[in-house]
Length: 79
Image 1 (cartoon, rainbow, N blue to C red):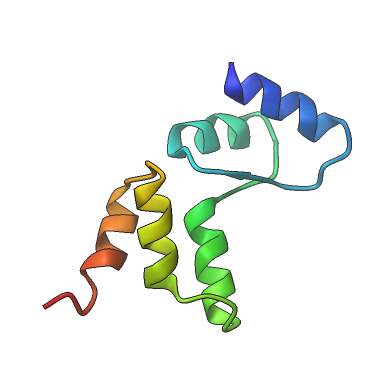
Image 2: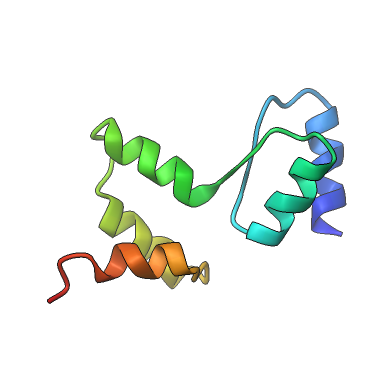
């Protein structure tokens, strides 16, 4: 259901959708929608010095987005 709603929004003139669901990302890409995972957005922002990637990972993990990539970021320099 969520992917269908996102696809409808995209068709209304959006150039890119940001998702926090790897399965949804694959489905949307398979039907030609330009989509990016929220972790990739975080990496881009961190590269530009806008955010701290570890703080970003903590925030999205707390919000319920817990993927292996997020866990890897959280383990960096954790001792």
